[in-house]
Length: 446
Image (cartoon, rainbow, N blue to C red):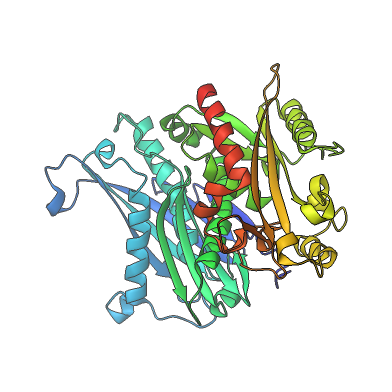
């Protein structure tokens, strides 16, 4: 647990108050933990001289820290007579990020300026400013649409940002000032609602970081931004409808898991399909499913059918496990519960190594198996299977992945799944093989 009681993958409490200012075309007060940012969008007719005649608009931003937004009073930059390098860099970041999701031609020859004033700073001010600026911008554009000043809504997608970092060798989401100042690695991530990156700002504060650590941080940020965008949708309410209409028509697909690592892996493997991919975190009232099947297929079907029934949406569920030759196929269907019902990955890995203590290399063969079941309301369940042979190491290797990934070296490789980049792993893994088969089926349904 962190100093404020959060888990490493939890956002701070977030509150967005729209229409906070009565004169601005769009405004929001964003409170993220103890970081508070006021974002105001102002619409001006015309554009800069260098853009005149181009029949398109412009979105730009200004950013400032109030004098007592921090522990010690900052001198106003207006008093100093110049904008600091940090302020200039953040202003340009906010502007670039917003323009990435705006159809500037639909905006017409007008400029929208977003003022982002930090009332109180406790880490993540630039990312909070981007998340809040998007809401203020959406309200300003909705006003232009209602007043008939634009014919097409210019926002093409959602946009949010969050900070992540390695703090004392642990990946953490949404850093406070104390965590940020002591981080080994600091990374700011800006993403769209469709899951595409807009900007990454990463720094090794103390020592260089690995590709595996970078992937871990990006996965953590992606999940955090997904949650932030859901909160933007809720805050905007009906004002979000024009953005939704700009998105391709999407069918809902529920992943029958709340495992963050598995959700991110499945979303990446299904990228490119016109699907609104949800997980059990989006349905907190769905009861847990008792996985008492004797095979991977039986458990996958049990979960898919139950989630489909409770959500009334198309659902896919997988049951995966590791079958070790010298252990007569154990842990098998009990892979996630090998060391107990609520066992951690570390506990399961430790028990497996203990059970294989003294087994020579040539007898450490194993196979990962994945069965994925697709359940649709009123239709028969469809299943596919993927398998990957390999061997079990005698010590954990690598920092990526989840489950038994640090112990499994696939045939033809020298690295464990945990030591491979995500793309390489997905190309050969049991889940990757099964998902490619399921993706072909889903493509025909979309």
